Amino acid sequence: MARASHATETPATAWLKRAGIAYTEHLYDYVDRGGTAESSRQLGVPEHEVVKTLVMQDENQRPLIVLMHGDCQVSTKALAREIGCKRIEPCSPEVAQRHSGYQVGGTSPFGTRKPLPVHVEASVLGLPRILINGGRRGYLLGLAPQVLVEALGARPVHCAQPG
Image 1: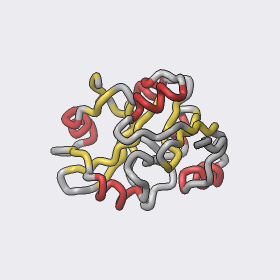
Image 2 (image 1 turned 90 degrees about the vertical axis):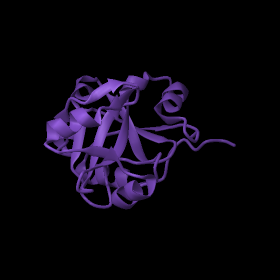
Image 3 (image 1 turned 135 degrees about the vertical axis):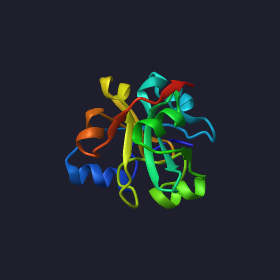
Image 4 (image 1 turned 45 degrees about the vertical axis):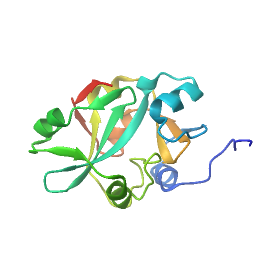
């Protein structure tokens, strides 16, 4: 089956367009549980430059987004310490979808159903460009990492651990 060369608009791309933010589109064949390793392999980019969008919650079930290098994991203990919470844990896929409005595997930090606090691993901001989910499975957007801070108000944190 031939893959389209252009994706249809998503809440994420509509949000970026309204904000006047330039991005490039990168389509790949989504593989269930393939994650950033699969997308980086198909697109020929380092997995470290593919940023995953993770919906998590604190001890009071308040949701938040964490943006992390594809080849790293989030140290929830380090993140909780840094943002002043007792505990951080991943949301279940159903809860994550309810908060973000996106299907797991297609979650973007842009155009979420409701505004969520966004935290970004600080070292992501040092990359020349990143690929991040565009709001559907098999669809990444290329953009400058500074957009995360400037447009989303993402707070830099230090919570990466080797994947």
